[in-house]
Image 1 (cartoon, rainbow, N blue to C red):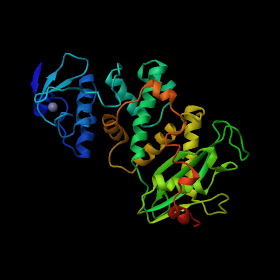
Image 2: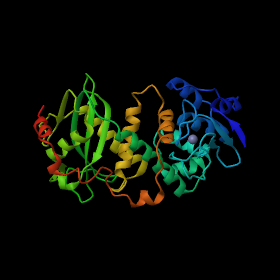
Image 3: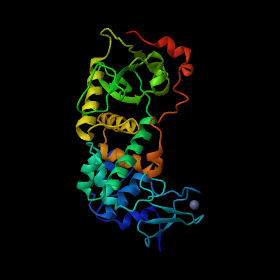
Image 4: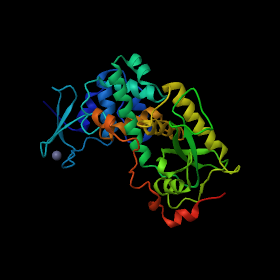
Length: 332
Ligand SMILES: [Zn+2]
């Protein structure tokens, strides 16, 4: 057992720069990751950018135990032991951190489980699980996002197939709402996409109640303007938002060859997370690393048993649409 403090742990590392809490420093920290020890240190900095804090008593003093697969931090005050990966998206993993970090880099551009399996040398099940756990972290980040400024919301249909799209209704149609904060040129700068329950659709497309409810859940109440474009929109829809929506559909088609309704929301969240990260100073890899360090994991069983929609179904009901949003439905 080694007696350590944050300074001690930092000093033990000589080949990786010690980082502060600002984005540039964290970015620098992740730029030089090669070994398993590098990964452990990068995860430590992502999880505790200002140094270790005991989850129980917030003490910064700890014993560092290195007899385990991953470092264990024992609080010198209350003796609570905290694993490096406990409480993160990597909790319980037996896959080397180097492979997780490689997966994060590949997910930064979007990759199927089949391709990831070959790239990082794991089984298909492990690649699938890593991919979905990373998506789970992205979903948590997206869940905290509220669209602001000028917001446009409109609908779309995902047919579930890479080979055809049709203007004719099909049993495999999956109605979606896409909302975005727009800049002065009416280009999307922040994006949220959500599957919509068929009970909130008129014929094939989400109805105005669904759009208003999307606004309640995902738009800042101080937003300047909120436009919910009804269908038929008669030319009032936002062209650039549709363009972004179809980029997402093409990505789903070419990379994954079609996604079923059960996991579609996770893939939509991955696309939105990547889109929104483009406006950030940090690289997507760095953002994802920090997000993974701060997100509790999800098990394989929870992933395969989860319902098709991640938002609370009870909320997504006509009766939940407040009057004030019903009046703001647009009509731009
Ligand atoms: Zn403690």
